Amino acid sequence: MSYINYFFHLSFMGLLEYFLLIGFYYCLCYFLFKKILYNAKIQQKEINRRDIIREILHSTTSSCIMAFLIFLVIQSPLRKYTKIYENINDYSLYWLAGSIIIGLFIHDTYFYWMHRVLHHKKIFRYIHLIHHKSTNPSPFAAYSFHVLEAAAEGLIVPILFFIIPLHKISILLFILIALFINGYGHLGYEIAPKWLRNSFLFKIFNTSVHHNLHHHKFKGNYGLYFRFWDQVMKTEHPDYVKTYDKIQKKRFG
Image (cartoon, rainbow, N blue to C red; front, side, top):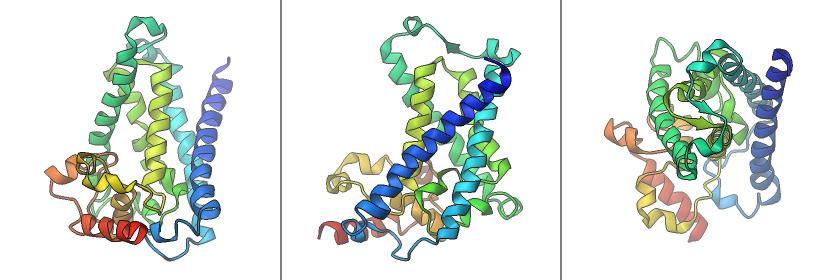
């Protein structure tokens, strides 16, 4: 496969994943089960169609930029310095799963501190403001970034190539899981089960309310997957738990 064809293949796969997964979220929450999920809506105002179009256009560009960063590493002399392995038997199946989990922890740390930098007053309005134009985000906002932010966001995958051994299966699953969680964070609905609130998992993982508050208030809740860094750095929004409980009380009575 030529370099150009390989790049278009990566871009096509990235866009396919985005539109299929995010489109699935959107169809479920905003069409099929809109009435059933009425009380699960985090912000009751309707999402503007123009906002959705803007989110899709920026996300399409971002997805191609992220694919290009992967392409630059895989199809260049840098490949020999990565820890990517082809033979699945080189490492155990436990590592195949473990590498994804470790990758998510590394990504969460990377994202938190990058996100804090993007909120610096001298940077925010030039780069991160595009993402924050979605004050009431839809799942299509998952990749709605300025081109520079898209590059910063997408850099995590090439970074992981050089840090931990990764098989192509774990790379694909990592990207899919990251997009799945990202879409949930921008969903606009809180669909977490009732039991989560009284589980130890609630203290560990972010929810859709957690990230929606960040879009609505612009400050606090900088983490991607976990509450860890927000709690350690005391940047978690003070109204998070109260807002989450209010939404769930409406849902479950």
